Image 1 (cartoon, one colour):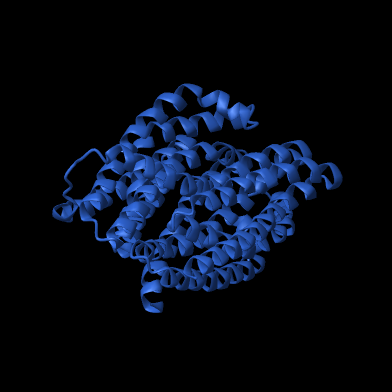
Image 2: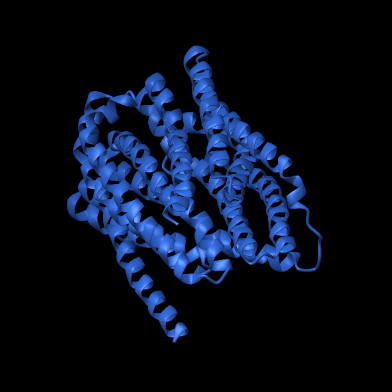
Length: 433
């Protein structure tokens, strides 16, 4: 079981790490071209990009979880219908997103606190991101299905293809042709387009195994997809509510310098959080498969392996983050002042990695085994804790209080996840007896 676990988890970790690098590549090229203002503008605009990606991830994961459960139960027609219904949902939601968001580009950025040059840069970047929403939603929505079809390596390769494309185009469009924010956005969109094409090629080769007969169950299956999607959507997007709350607080308590500093912090944290999500989401197909077979003990063994893997990964990231905290700041072309502040304050965020590693694994176990209510609680209570802390702590400690709000909210979710996990274990034991 351990070998199978790592056969799923290691490619997933690499794929999610790449998606984290995806998030910082634009910041690297723009920061080294336009400086602190360009870096801060991408950081302020990024929650909208993240919302688009979270929609794709949510629907894709929601459908893929059901696909794995019904695959474990050997209900092939229902399994295949979940795939095709999810594809239809992804296309439909893309159209809706473009209709809703494109006309309100500027008001959304103003709501996030952008003004002046930050607003101008943010509008340019977000405009092209929204025009390419189809590529981003389809790419993030199709990758989970590949992973749940025993194609974790292929999913990783699809993301590598998009990642390499993004880097090459960022270099050409931002540095060589000086297209600035527009170039960074176009590079991101086309990179996701390459990932989407790789996914389509994978499914085309397996098309004979995806044949489905339609019946009246499709409405029920749509409901199941969206019920399961709420958890992975929140898991993907909630960190960006953190971004919004902390950015707003940083502007008030520390000004533009604090926003530029937090841009680097958020990039570094993003990579680690996605690496930890790679552990939990890599374990999900196996957990769901055993759950579909009613093998609850095996599902728990996979979860426990994920606890160990995520804790070790978090500890390594803490060590590396501390050792290279100065180099990280210089990587983004930040000013000397911002680099020094980042190196001092990043230490506050490092301890939260341990909290997140454990709570993310618990959360993944919950939604992989259809314990959706518990998953919802863990996901959507975190921004509530953060909002409380970010409203109170800066009044006491200023910008230090703003930074402390994140690890404290992560610790609060850790405690909640442990309490819920013990409760579920007791329920399972009672049901056995």
